[in-house]
Image (cartoon, rainbow, N blue to C red; front, side, top):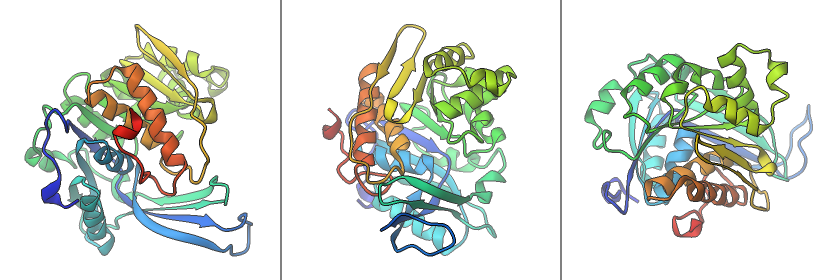
Length: 319
């Protein structure tokens, strides 16, 4: 899909803005179990990556008019990312930081799809100023009327704070990204519409927000974690727990959703697909209970395919 063919926001193609990590992923699939201290035969592929990027690419497949805000260097990788993302139907508003290297992520997967190790070079975003997106946001169309703003915790705390202040009330969805970065969300918990976390991230956020000993929150199951996090301000808390499924809660309703069986080819991007499926469902008018089921369906398709975005993913495949 060329930039000219990207649909404008309307009832059939609601708008969502994504803010966060944009980098080049090198995904390695070993043809035999990976062993230390020796090389392993494998296949490798380069694709756009980063949580916000994966969510944006999936949203574009789900009939959403998506704009992606991020940063890149003045290097070949940055130029390649812009072209690849435009081909995916994503409008990119990438702020260039001259002299810096575009973000890079490398993942190593065993033949069963399990992630063995990963490394990321995200200094370009880690050192970004709070006003990084200000200029791009002034030229972006339809931000005020977007169904949702999505941000990942790869963004520095000051930038997350600024976005939370600029976003229309109740329209901010965020993802904790990792146990190490999820604590950045603590100062903005009372401005979050939907808080997406896995169990480890939920424990990290709760421990940081309540200044609790991590061993105390480690005893909490996902239902208790979600209930305690909900008291800190988010409108909705959704916690994933791998093969054990998803638990979500608001002040009025809650649900435990089992994970859908899937042949695991690659775990990359499954959580990001769940976010995209859920947000797309909401943007297209579904209630949260139904949107979360759509998110699980998107995650299942992603687990069953190589890469962070399943080629089979479409809005009709989730209904």
